Image: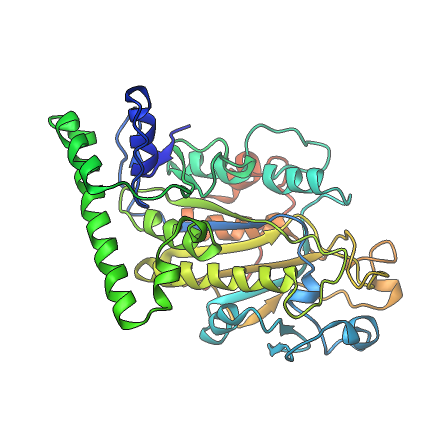
Length: 411
C-alpha cells in the first residue's frame, strides 16, 4: 500500500524524532517506491459507500405505487419529494442529485442488491466490497481494487486505511484530514534549512508554505467581506465533513498522473428509530450525500465526460415501518449512478411492486437488479475493462451477470 499523506502528516512523522509537532494544511505528499505514471486514457470512477443500510424507499419514494401511501405515506414528514419520472420521486434533501437528474447525468437503479440475502451489516458490507458471490466471503481484495489492477491504474481511499473494496489496487493511496492546527511561520522557517537540498521534502515544504499563506489571505478576505464564511473555511472540526472529502477526492483524481478510482465512505445510515424526523440523523445524512455529489460534480467538471460516481449501500430496509418509526434491516435498496456519459433522467431496472406477494420474504423490497451488473457497466464505461475481465477477475464466477444495458450512452 502506498500511503497518501498531506504535508502536515508527513512533517509530523518526520519531525517526531526531533520533538517536533509539525502540522501543515490540507495538502498531499505521496511516498512511493516508483513514480506515478499518467493514465490519460482512463476515466475516473468514484464509489461512494453508504455504510449502515440506506432505506431506498426513503431516498427514492414511489408515490405512484398504489401500495406506497398505505405503507409509507404518513411516514414521510417535511417538504414533499422532488418529482422524477413515472411513479418515482426523490427525497427533498437530495437537491444536487435532482439537479443532476434534470441535466440528464443521473440514473437511478431501484430494487437492487448484491447477491447477499442476509441482514447482517458486517456480512453485507463484506459481500458488497468483495464483489464475490454468496459463499465466497472472506476475500482479502475488493472488486474495485482488482479492477484498478486489471486496468493498470491507481486507487485512492478517502480514509485512514484502505477499505476492503479497494484492496488489491497498486498503487494504493489513502488520505484523511488532520485535526491539528496550522504551525506558526517561525516553525516553517526553522524547518526550511533541514529540508534544503532534498528534492521531495524541500518542494513539499515550499508548497505547504505557499498554501498556508494563500489560506490565511483567503480567510482574512472572507472575514472582511462576509463574517459567516470564515467559520467554514477554517478550523479542524470542519475538515472531515462530507463536502471536504469530496473536494479532496476531486482534487486528487483531477491530477493527470493521479489515481483513476477512489472510494469515499459515509456512515450513519442505520435507521431503526425516528428516521423521518425532518432534522434527524437520516435526513442530515442525505444532505451530506447531496454535498458530496455537488463537490464531486463541481470538482471533476473538467473531466466529467469521462467520470462516473456510483453510490450504493450494503442492503435496503424493510418496507413496513416499525414500532419506533424507523425501518429494520432489509434486502432490496437503491443505487445512484452519475457521470457525463450516463444515460440519465430515468429509473433503471424492473420495479417489483409493493403488494404483499411482491415482497421478498413478505417484508422487504424484492431485488430485481444485481448490483454487480451496475458496477460492471460503470467499470466498462470508465476503465474500458472487457466483459471477460469483469466476469473472471473483478467479479469471479459472475458470467451470468451482464453489464446493465442502457445505463451509459454509447460513445
